[in-house]
Amino acid sequence: GAGVSQSPSNKVTEKGKDVELRCDPISGHTALYWYRQRLGQGLEFLIYFQGNSAPDKSGLPSDRFSAERTGESVSTLTIQRTQQEDSAVYLCASSLDRGGYGYTFGSGTRLTVV
Amino acid sequence: AQSVTQLGSHVSVSEGALVLLRCNYSSSVPPYLFWYVQYPNQGLQLLLKYTSAATLVKGINGFEAEFKKSETSFHLTKPSAHMSDAAEYFCAVSAYSGNTPLVFGKGTRLSVIA
Image 1: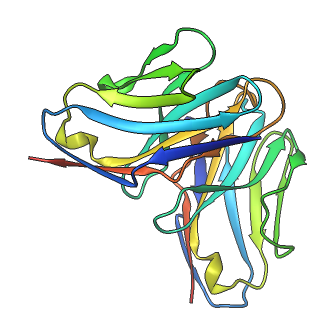
Image 2 (image 1 turned 120 degrees about the horizontal axis):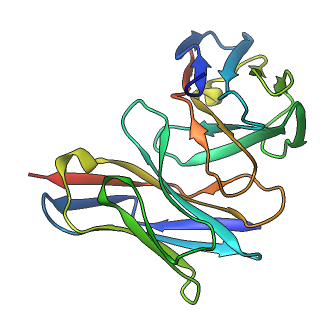
């Protein structure tokens, strides 16, 4: 597609429920990144995909968080047993490579856990 | 490892005044450096990037940044602020080579006063 598409744009869920966030990168972009942005904070790195492998999962906050990617296409970020501290905007970005091209970001999914 | 420090979480300028947003980085290897802008309820948009070519980098919307290795800085400037420049600005760094995602600063919110 023309840009990075994320869905849903907004998600309200009850504490303890599981949620799935979706990211559709720009066609041909081999690298895909997930970041979390808490209110008034910077971007916190979660996980990075090169193709469908994840060389760097170091940012996933706990084992409740997981992500997968199908080929060089869609990625899903799953949060199990959501907690209130998971409330944030989850941003996805893609790039041609991991180097100096810079990222194209989606508009994010705003997750609210009540 | 890389890190970024943005001095000042909030900067306020008058319309028509100089904009200066400060960014200092730490990197054990030659860096790539980026500035992104985030408008309310949107994802991040790339303003400009330094990838080891010219040290003075020009970006969109009249912004520019200068890479100063001796000062480990990459400050963002614009000669004359416009009301539409009001947004959150993020500085980011990644390794020139190697497999490292972008590391972002905490952001600086720019307000423009009429």
